Length: 195
Image (cartoon, rainbow, N blue to C red):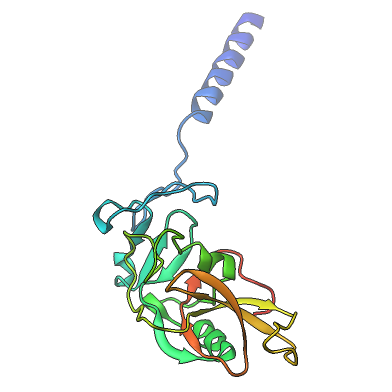
């Protein structure tokens, strides 16, 4: 009797191990491609649009958005070149519904700078980029990053916003109240608190 009980308990233990090792019934498929987790420490080289592994034009977003596999950010495919002041650019992105989705915002100066290639001019974007709407000359695109310190050319100003000038890819500070720039909205990432 004791041996039969031990044998039965042994069979139960084996059955538990077998059932515990079977795959779960979780859903593992959905629409769209899968990519490795982006990290800011990787560098994906872009030489031409055909050989650029960094940018993916998202067809399930009606080709209106681009995934940057290097940073994990989703950018609007086209920069909106209606020149707006800083405040109006923030409102524009916060109300945007590109690709049928809300949740857009102005990028930080670091996120916007991540799209520039310091070896290129006119525009300073990587050679294989899929972006449109960049008309030159233009004053640049607003970021959500604010500098409280006033620049020398506007000492009476209390707050200024950073922008990227895409002719040379340089970051600059400008006075919010009287300057105009393009608006390029982004989804994902950290954003900034003031928005």
